[in-house]
Length: 552
Image (cartoon, rainbow, N blue to C red; front, side, top):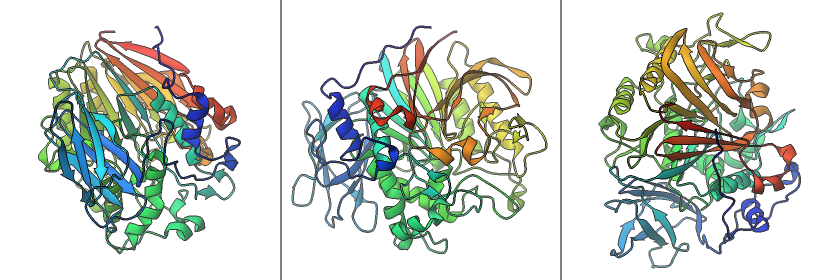
């Protein structure tokens, strides 16, 4: 199949300026030399972020939501001005989302679809907080756009405070992550999807990497206290000092003109998905839910919701913390869903009556209805946990366990695992495969790898057509955070499936581009590892591309 023709980097950004923007003043040498660096106030285009530390927008056809933080607290209100071509200027007062006045949320409604708006932020005295910038709403549901480009990846979080005692650095330096992000953005995507693990601050499970219990982390940010609420207590400062910088210092204002959609996964709830006789980290307890909600409320937008999502799963303005839909005219509908925040486990002694599921039954029913009813040319699923591949761990869809030979197998029974998880995924995959003439595509995160393949059968029962699965690639993982290092088990296709691997899981850093047109979706995978050299990121090209055509 022919490769997708990808543009080079943004024309007015030469290679030296690209690296300067991505890496700040940090060294371009080895990773050990890269230390946390504040983003420069002005970027390579001369745009000035001023007092704004970070800014992340989300949008649909008629709404914009901004999450932003400031370098210093601001007690008075801030105002967002929004103006489209030939329209009157609209002014919206922001809502403070933290106790100190560092974080704000701005909502603008009643906008025109597919329109480029000019936005500006001002303090109570009318002084600009940063330069104005453009942002476009998505096209209307009845529009017929010809194409769409999506940039997606997983596991972008991680603090530079975290080191393993004998394996060293756990995450890529922020400077290197910013360079990878900048390279992805240089292909000018229409939207961005960050799929899970935006932050790492594991607190509870004793055999995990115990990131938040490291002396460096406790010294810099303190520790979360399960006996206290999150907001208005010392826990809020832990989020500001420990979790917030993993988002604000990575993204800065780089996404200001790119609608972004952030799906949550296990580490966003401040723990890893593990279990033993003493502790099952999921379903999340009250503190975990509060931490995930507070981090989202302060630092990145909730998900836009689509037609008829049950009211229990969205707020009064039509945004959801966990389940969303991105509709781009008649071209594409995306279903985005968090598989951790509302999971149920029938193996939990406290809930023997629970049916195991990653997604609430109401939401599953909504997803199946959308598969049958959508008028979009393409429907793509974006779950937070991986599809097709297993690492033999507890909190995944599949029953596989690691064997002594390093291969996955189906016995003995996986401790504390719920077969209801697997059965729910099987129902969704079968519903996806029944869309004849469509491309059943699933793009997932969590597994710290890049891969592509297709599922042909589940437990020996053939699907109506193969379901394509892609692991989007990890922006921040390094060393012991890859599955083969942390678990001693490389990702492999689940033994419960009949599957074909096009690209076997690659434990390197990278991202994925999806190019959508009326008749196809082209998947382009990018990879990079520290041995390649940071200076190579500016010229990174896809190592694998496949065009998936409707009807075959």
